[in-house]
Length: 294
Length: 319
Image (tube, rainbow over all chains, first blue to last red; front, side):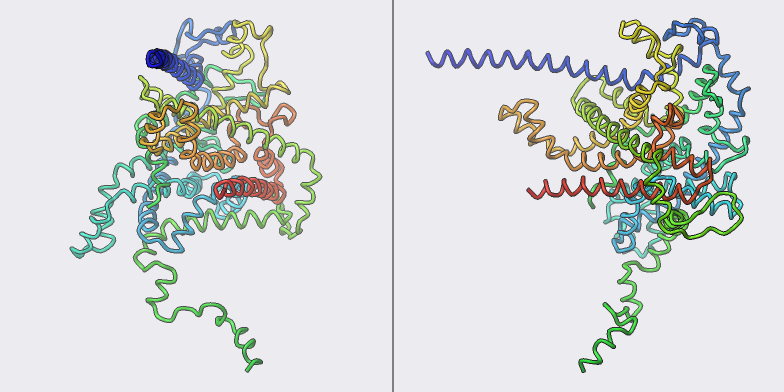
């Protein structure tokens, strides 16, 4: 008798568990959908707004799908502000600074991983400590220094600032990738009589390429998206980057021509979105790669 | 004998370890040889000249009356800037706003990102799509995020008022970003949205380090979802959570661009974060010294909070 009771209880328990699992799965999907809606709807709204006519934007009852989608806002955006010029400036600044930052970060990251010493430990500590300081503490002296060098309102000055600013994260990411390169390969090269520079160039660098590309794209996106330094350091309209030019669409009273603003904002996002789509897989490993103890 | 000993010690260079004599030993002391220095310097010099140096310079400016566009030389004025700060109500207000903002954004980011990371760690269908979409806010320029949410919050053309009205939750359209009691919560929501991907990615990577055998063992032992989370997942995840929370707090407390675009610190300073205030002080009114003092005060607050946070963590780990 006691065995039958036990069996029934077990069966009920099994059934409850199965019902619970199905309910759990449904709940998980529901939660995931809620998350995705929360994360995606602002971007969809931006895109939708960018295709709406001024009349539709002024109407009281906004809709998700534009009633008469048109490209007028995009045309108007290019007329209102020198967008192409700004895009070119952003491309120049972000591209150059990313290349320089990665070029000087690769050898440094290599040394930091392979030659533990007081200097490299201090470097690693600096990467973390530098995160703590508010930008205002660094921008005032940079502003004064660049002013003395007559490099305020100049793109090379901004490039210099971006290189240093993106170095900590580049070093962090690259260290992780360097750690993943098997040490035995380098030792083999050393046995064959290769100098350190040769080893770095012909053994480590080829293996580092995927990580290099990821770091390069990340540095590019950070510089492309950057706003504060550009806002302070650039003055003339023809030198502004994308981020700063967007703020010019918003008038002094906060009144903005919503359609062209949305169109320009969407265009400014495209390069970053594209790179992130390519980066996506590497980002997760890259973020933590630097943190793995070697 | 006993008289000569102290004099000996007073000779410079004889204190502590004597400097290494041979080149080989000198190399070891710094731990790097020529080749390594050659590889390190291209990165080290820019960091020293354009990051470490300016930071020290900036910190020293806090003790001067440095101003923009002044001809007479800058003077050292000691801690006057800091004693002024103590009575600057606007500054104290901005600090309060900054702390509320940083605490709320960091806490909400953690809770929401943890939920999302746990979901993305499950073997659900369309996980790849979800993982990609979850990164979108990270890819967007701060300025665009600000503009985008201005469109969402827009009084008439915004989707938020429209949705709330059709759900019958509000009677008249609200102006989210200029309303005294709504502006700060509205801005905090944007801050959470913008910072979620980084936190999620870090937590997700942390989750993948939780030993699978442990989870399975707990499952076989009949531990429920909640019990599995508290006894297996959370202890393994805790170091990652602490690290990302500390970093998030620092980033949020120092954040600028998002709120600058959304409200410029309005209405009436209700969303004026310390960084916005310091920016105005430095580049609108040209008070470099005073703004640098604000920056140092921000560092001090962060350092104290971080020390408390990490000490508590260390003590818990010991127990």
